Amino acid sequence: MLHSILHALLHYTGGDNGSGPWYLELSGSVGDIPLFAAAIVLIRKHNCHVKGCTSIITHTDPEVHAPACKRHHSLRHKRGVPQ
Image (cartoon, rainbow, N blue to C red; front, side, top):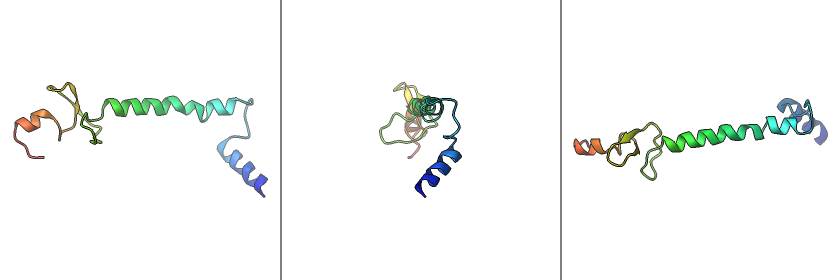
């Protein structure tokens, strides 16, 4: 029973039809590491500089020279716009 479940799982994930012993590992889970790393770098680069703010769509704040969302942008505070 367990053997048939494992075989079905390997078949549906593509793990039973490889070209070699390391091909499936390198093209599968290990091959996705650069994609996840690139996503993390982009999120951190474009995230608001205020700790705890999770806004990703940001603009560069001219006073602190860091990305800031609309709520934490310095020009918004100078115009007197309430948060």
